[in-house]
Length: 225
Length: 313
Image (cartoon, rainbow over all chains, first blue to last red):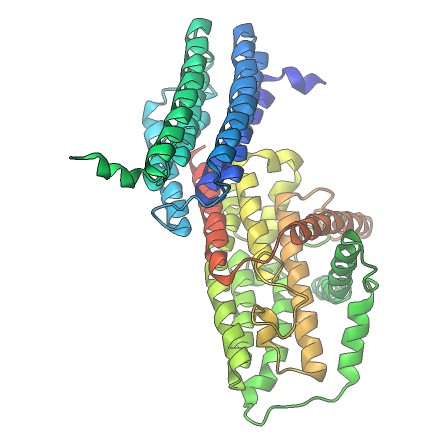
């Protein structure tokens, strides 16, 4: 089991998992079913947790283990369950109804990835021991951009929440791959932020649904007057 | 020279013999997975043999195109097969072209098949041709992108060269660009061979069929040639996917023990890939025709990402 301690193998592993997370993000753009979307988000978060775990292992930074553990419990298990229960309670199972059609959206996501690679290139200054940054940073920026695009492209509040959460995954990935883990207190703070945000947004979504009998945020113009 | 001819003959024989067995194997494996008994894996040989001995019915409206199509389809597919590394990295017809020749030989065959479908003037044929062309127009750029990703690494579009470079690094397929390209090529494989999310290979006389609608008017030996050709095309694409992305056990040259080991590995890898295809076919329902562009756009973006990441990493 020599390769388990080889940093080069670790870098390959992290890059591979980051690429898979990106593929999942693009697949989320193409997927119409809400439940599948939530599960994909869970898988993506799990991959991020695994990336954090791998970085913790290969760089010997023990406190990232805590971040990895928190990611997997909160974002890969707790939030998907919460969101699925919310979707159940509101009574929508599928049909996301994006504004742009699926093929166009997917091609736009591809273009956003391309932009992310160009942007990531300019951030990257190779220094000693920072071999990980380049790929993973580009992937993180593309997850971030695609998450943004998903928020714009969707009508219903719940699916926008999901897009926001996946956008946050991109931020997390960027943070962990650039800094090899922020101070623990920051990480924990971010987690509670996300959890609270998801809870608040969940309640908000429920209220919107109660008051307007629809989650389509474009119908909220009726508030005026 | 003699060695070259010998290689070509051997590879042709391999393609001709293995292709019906492969489609029969996939069919019977699929039947087993769905708790049916299914035909024996040898059934395609029996079908081809039976069809070759039968007489055929020609539509009154058919022109020479109709009778030329089966030969052209069969021969272009077979020639394309000679450019793919099967048991060794060295290919018999590698001198004549690489990936581009392969893709467009397959394209030529498909073009004539579509013409043959249109030629009789039946509405089913026209429908099938139009659908087939739509799908292939979506699948072809993806095929190109996926193979270019590998070609950049090897510095050549000759498949023999690509396979030779890949031999030394068996674990290369774990790289993100390779994985993405492999996934893109797999989707192309599904679309091009008419597998379930895109087309249903088992359907007849349904409004949803694509490939079968095109060849509806063919019978007898012509139908045998087309079915055999389609089986060879499937084998060629599967071999391409396997040997370019996972050249495990592939011999560098055509020596006797090397080629024998290569054949063994080829069969093992084909069985593995067939299992994946069977699971995909069983787990998915056929898509509506207008959803197919969505699938193909996913494949296209995967291919584009693979190319981007292989450039920028």
